[in-house]
Amino acid sequence: MKLKYKKLIIIITVATFALAFLILTLIPTGGSPQNVEDARLTLNENQDIVDLVTNYFQAKKTVNMEELSTLVSDSNQINKEKFTALAEYVEDYQNINCYVIENEEENASRVYVKYDMKMKNIDTLVPCLSAFYITGTSDGKYVIYLSALDENQIDFITAADKNMEIVKLKKEVNDGLNAVINQDANFKQLYQKMETQIRAATGSAVDSAPVDPAGGVSGTSVQAVSDAAIQ
Image 1 (tube, rainbow, N blue to C red):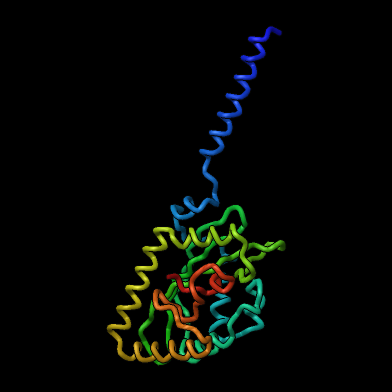
Image 2 (image 1 turned 30 degrees about the vertical axis):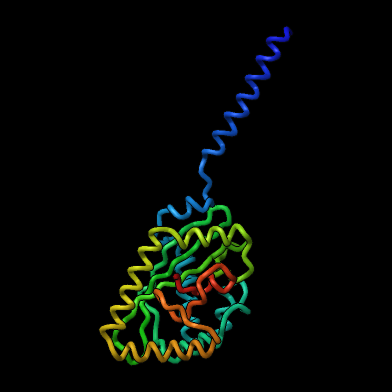
């Protein structure tokens, strides 16, 4: 083969590899932070996840640690003192709706739970928003993930919480909470007492934005994915 043809083949081969690499770099990946931030927030249609979240709130309401331990990946991360303090004030969790952003690479989802909290002896319902990281298990079940997070999981959760639809949902819940506090003096008084008691039980400040006061400090620690109030 003449030298000039060999050179031509080499040039074509290099150009082909370069083009393939360029195409690959342009294909979006499901787990990239940018895509997660822009992802469409959808109402969950997976009944297993609905059942998991519903059972979790029921067990939290009654501080049923045995039941809670079957619903989470690490029951040692559950703050029993916090849930016990809540149980003194909270009568029920109602109108539970789950919104999801899927982490396709991990068989997991960031699940945002919007619901109404009914406090004892108070008729007014208060809107709340909590967030969970829910993962699939090897036996086909789902659990609320409270174990250690790796870097990819942290990046996904951080990006999901910046999603514009989540930002809007947070504002909606926060506005609703503030409206109840401003309009119902009895609720405000009981709510403030509950905050104080939870603060004493946990040794830390209670989240001040769209609040389920049971929520952990928002962020990316293992506890942050458990019932975490979104900031």
